[in-house]
Length: 158
Length: 287
Image 1 (cartoon, rainbow over the protein chains, first blue to last red):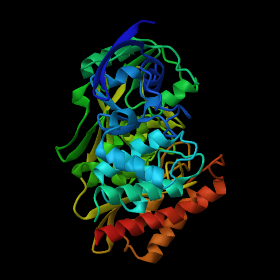
Image 2 (cartoon, rainbow over the protein chains, first blue to last red):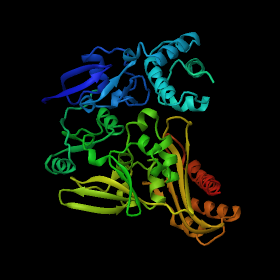
Image 3 (cartoon, chains in turn green, blue):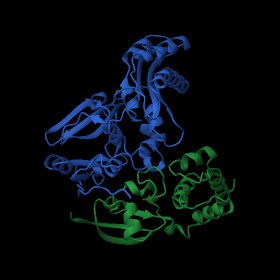
Image 4 (tube, rainbow over the protein chains, first blue to last red):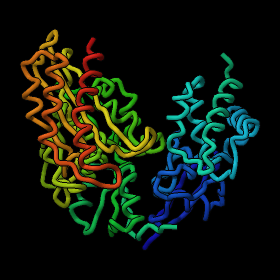
């Protein structure tokens, strides 16, 4: 099978690569481009561990084909390292003990980031909907929800 | 690690180009969000030789009002529909698209993909049925309009012939004296398939029902309209007694099965409950 050319922006950096079309975005990011924050859990779009931003929108990268990001901007937690919102969110996760094994954390942070970016003062119900596509198998949801609400306070205190 | 079966990838930039590819190629599948197809391919339920990506066709991404219809293009995502004022004006559909799947799925999945996969549990199917939606089916041979119910041929089976593509969904613009709602029961609240669901549409003057639409998900081989319940509401006052009577009658017209998500008995018993809840919400929204 012939390879297809994919040109896109990864964390602000231009990428041009050739890849077999039946490669998922998650595989391309991890195995070809070394972005290891993107975790492979269910590979069915259900657990959220592989969540990345595509043109700013959270998506599970295991059910996106690599050539489908042609011309798009893909962002992972690596690309948000110095982002003020992500810095507060990360700190809130640390201080609230919202990380146990850490496997869900990058995806959880991406979903929380998109949530707070679009809705700086979410209710706890809105937080639950915001992270409904991310599973924490350590079942630390309470602390994760507290951390997101805490981050909202830090970013834009009411 | 579940590998995706090998296929050739095609990314046409016009609808005409896509229809030609779908006509010429063997074992071909169109892909938009891939929220169902990618899972089927990983499970080896579906192993196409060719995949035609519709996402690069700008003319298929729209929500617009025209000729008295709200028209939704094939690549329109649930998230787009959840925030567009035109689709917000179709309350039952808005209920469905704003809570289907998860944020990640809503950003990726499309209404067209949801109905074409023809799951009896498809969340957008019943809202579209009660709003008398039509679908535009196109191929190299031409264009057909079909009532949405004709799309559903069986569980996960649609009526499309090889080479045919659903390119648009059309919903008559709801009149000011109408309202609708969609309710569902899942195993949990977040990110789950419906165990049973109901959509209702009512057009009413004061409290007198002029027209009604009633449909249920996950109670038959396909999403199911129940005309008997609609007849029982039409021309009646929407009193609690009349609503209860029409809702209870639904039990005789659904034919659910028992599966991992729920039993047939439970699904049957929940139909009147969901129909009452949906009607109540629709009536509250009318006020």
